[in-house]
Image (cartoon, rainbow, N blue to C red; front, side, top):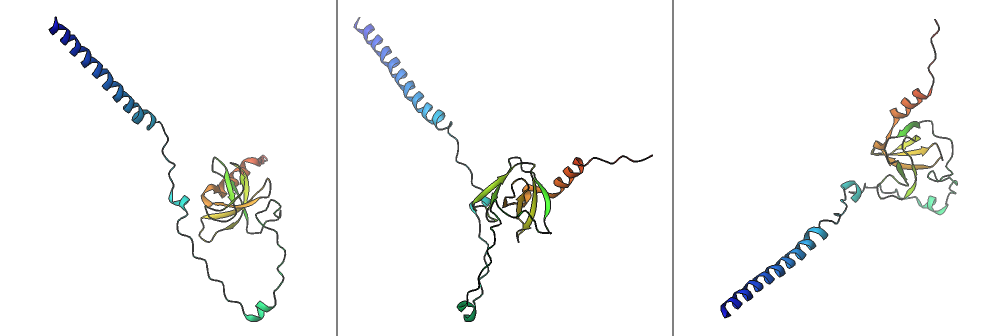
Length: 176
């Protein structure tokens, strides 16, 4: 009976070891596959968002000593980016429409890292006031609240505004 008892002991020991080993492997597998695979990866940062190389600004010209001695009073101009911006637009401005589905954030300066000054909704009519030197940004003014700010040029469409105006106007019937 001594031999049969040792065989049972051996069988119980092997089964206990296998159960313990499978519990350890299951715990490690759960940690690596469930917890690590269920977290979201970090948000990618594209070249436009990094800022890229900054444009080189022109050096200011040195002022003459006579001009520095007599400061000229600067006219009190309104900030064009404030909500109280003037209603009148320059004659070279033209109408456009926001074509970006999520609407646009208006920025204080024509660069990605600039401070936001407001926003405009999708399909909102805007007036393009000015285009940046590199043609990548446009200064727009919203028709709804006269708020001005810079947006990327590809997010608005001049032809979409013209097409919607044609649809809004009733067609004249031809006389027989």
